[in-house]
Length: 419
Ligand code: B12
Image (cartoon, rainbow, N blue to C red; front, side):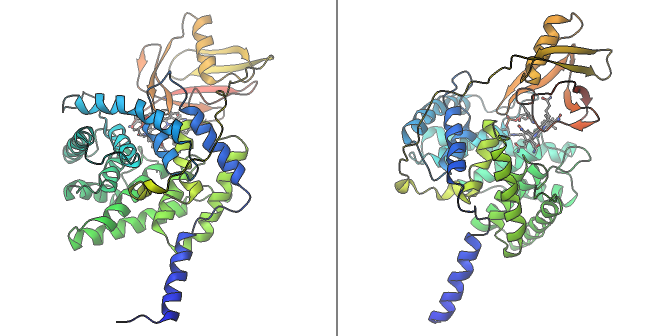
């Protein structure tokens, strides 16, 4: 059937509206470039292993410093090789589903030969991890890692055009249906969004049984409902740090009716950027695609030939300025007797405060574990587990110990949590 010009025009217009769903208002180029620059600066930090999420964020930008991106890719390759040549087993309590998934996405975004040995091995490892995660859900009702990493794994497979076992997908659908994606009682918008991205990718790319597609459609709608219902009057979807992934989901969903919610969320993100709230490289990397109206599923469409250098300057690493004045912060460890005032220079991070407390008090020790987000507090006075970070009166911190900087007279509460 031939399509007439007016009909074609309407179709084209509909397409354009969809593409521009979560548009960035004009006049923000400098702000966006400065985030890009900060993300590039994060690649200069050689004290940590290269982080595949940072690389994916850079590749989904429209501005590039190809030399720096390539240097970072070379560092990433060392980790990829180590990961892919390790045995096909999962160390007790240390599933690597999310990390593998991010490496698979990074590899795909790199435009390097698509069928390298390393890439195939990474995919095999990821497939194995997803299988083991699925078995754990079947036996114990939860994945080995989390539904966030499980979804990221499905997304990475799908973006790489690899078939995902439909039982693996089905476990995610069933968990969403039973509202089990969050941590304990609370809903996690980050996880909802990641699950939504994974399901949208699967729905669009590969041929699955019609019944499964029907279920996916239903759950994607549910996810959208939860994400929109979480919107605050200021536009945040969940909190400020879940908003980037939530917007990625809305971009990918492409519902015209969501344009207003999406614009509000974008405004809130731009405002937070101006206030310097996006300083953690992992958070910047999740935000970067949104600033170019993209989502992680666009890793599949990176137009390698079209990537051009933009002479973004690389200046020296940003040094955190520690203030001259001293401030007093009360540190309380719940369930233990520790309750003391710690004096530190203003602008100190919570990590600096914990270090100070440890130096000054024989009854306070702590340990951390490195992660892609930074140091994760694991142990206080030999009590290991998941420590929650709060400030008085019972407000959950939205940042980790290395990023959060308490104010004078603030009380920080460390609370043992259950998962
Ligand atoms: C799952 C998850 C958790 C789980 C992790 C355990 C598990 N079962 O997986 C739990 C519930 C324990 C958790 C705790 C916290 N989390 Co959390 N978490 C996430 C989530 C949804 C996914 C992380 C992940 O798997 N990434 C993928 C893998 C491949 O990366 P990874 O680095 O290897 O993953 C590990 C670390 O990320 C670590 N981790 C999880 N959260 C955090 C937070 C910080 C600050 C650090 C340093 C590490 C860390 O646990 C992961 C599994 O081992 C992200 C969402 C997001 N948008 O990224 C939020 C997220 C990273 N968490 C966040 C926060 C604020 C926290 C807490 C500080 C909350 C609090 N006030 O207590 C605590 C950490 C306290 C501490 N002890 O240091 C924020 C960080 C924002 C920021 N500015 O950096 C995010 C973005 C959620 C949000 N929207 O607010 N989290």
